[in-house]
Length: 123
Image (cartoon, rainbow, N blue to C red):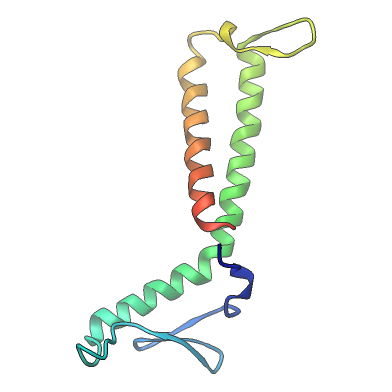
């Protein structure tokens, strides 16, 4: 996997169809030596979208991690309240009350989706 810490420092800027960081050109959108110059509106929109995504990446990844931690903490509390415990204090999941079960399963599914998304964007 590529080491994202070696990427050009942010913020990046969209300059027409060019993507820049400080004085460096990172890339140009919409250009192909076979097809000629880019279509200006589409290339500008692509550059703007890339820049917005890159500049928001670290903050969004951190926020997603925090959301996952909070949901997991709430889930642990819900499991603790909804289930009986064995002699060592461990939760007996099969004892979960029927009213709590769908909500807890939804939270577990949501955590799995967060984990899958984080795996795509965080090394």
